[in-house]
Amino acid sequence: MTSPRLSLALACSLLLSSLAIGQSRKRHSNSPGDFSYYLLVLSYAPDFCDQPGGNKDPRECGSGRKIGFIVHGLWPQGDTERGPENCGGSPVAQSIIQATLSYMLVPSLIQHEWTTHGTCSGLSAADYFATLRKARDSVNLPADISQPAKLLQLTPAELEAKVATANPKFPKAAIRSSCYKSGEVQEVRVCLTKDLSPRACGSSVGECMLPKVEMLPVR
Image 1 (cartoon, rainbow, N blue to C red):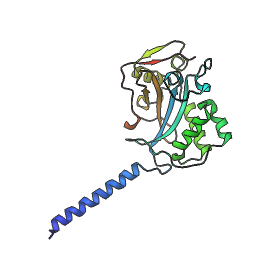
Image 2 (cartoon, rainbow, N blue to C red):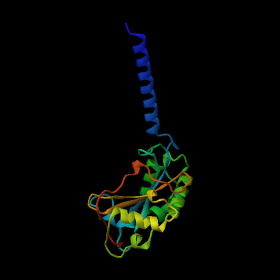
Image 3 (tube, rainbow, N blue to C red):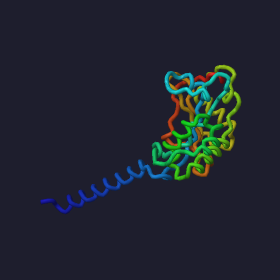
Image 4 (cartoon, rainbow, N blue to C red):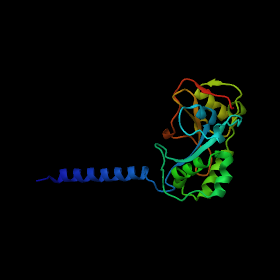
């Protein structure tokens, strides 16, 4: 026979478990609009194009293009973990692709980012890509890292500091960098609120932990 005290403890345990499961589901929800902030992800094209394998589109990787950073995406993000992905949605209209090509260069990337991340923003495709373009326009990148004429070697902290200096109204904690295992720069990441004000990044954004990274010159 179960004692009343044990029954109460069991009931409390089940209640706490139920609450924990509910919170976990909320954190992992794929409900559009269920996220904390945006992560603007800027990919450094010369280093991406130098990586082995993968589809290297000539619009991004072709010689003579002089491409530096391009927008990889605008990702709904959670404070302590990655945001929702793949929330469903129809293909992006050609008019939206044309309006966004100067930011992302490759139509397949535009479609991929909408399917994977944009559909979870709670916005229409037109409004999501307008927000993406506005977010990119709000970030300044200094010429010495956006169009380097020679190989750069610097620490991740130095790279982030250069971006922070070019955006004095941004908190330094709003800017992060990521890198490839080869030691080349992968991305500059900028954390923005839903209304695109700069804010500190959460722990889910990650950080390049290498002591030094390289940036190939534009080509």
